[in-house]
Image 1 (cartoon, rainbow, N blue to C red):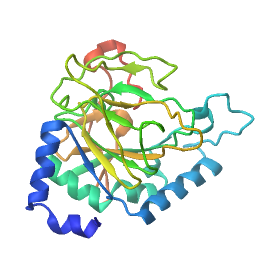
Image 2 (image 1 turned 90 degrees about the horizontal axis):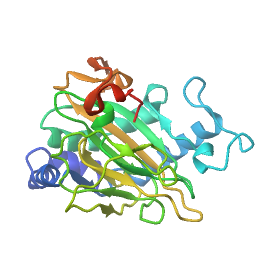
Image 3 (image 1 turned 120 degrees about the vertical axis):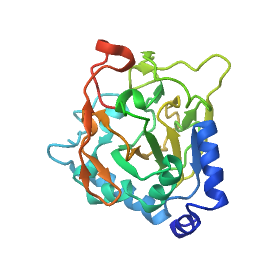
Length: 276
């Protein structure tokens, strides 16, 4: 399905109604083929260059000699690349993503960040968590757009979501197993609920609510990366966000500052505001 087909069908189509109902009920929406093969390849090549050459002050390349045994030492995630790379900024403001977010939010979205995960073979996953614990959006919450750059399945560390946890409050997490997760936070799956794998093809995008519990397992494949381009968005009605995410970006590409939530949340003084 092409961007043009999305654009022509929104906002009044039956497809838009189905997307909105799915997202509001289950807390997530899997859209197939939102990014074209050419767009996926451009994103992949851009981050390969960032990894190889680095960006002074933003991303430092790690030599084989300096890296430890952890694959993530050699392939650390790339944060906020929209602030210095035009391809990343353009992908974050993707027209197809914008059109779907307008349906999900019911208003114009604002972009808060982008991240890129290489997740090489042998890399740890990320324990179950809730995104708005980190972004601290108010009022309301954030929405993630998680785009697969490689085909994604259980073996190479695919995404798991816990349907219908989008109505939960944000909770103070427990401590994750560091052998399985590269982050230290863990939100337990509520009793009676179950995590569900979302298999994806390169170019697919998974949208999910900032309260939805989600995470990923380790990459247990021998030679397959699980690269992903992840962005977070908020409603234009947002008044405050954690300071790490200012300035926001309008979908026209203009920077926009909002008020800042500097610390606190469900953990109170225990939460120091480390970025997501």
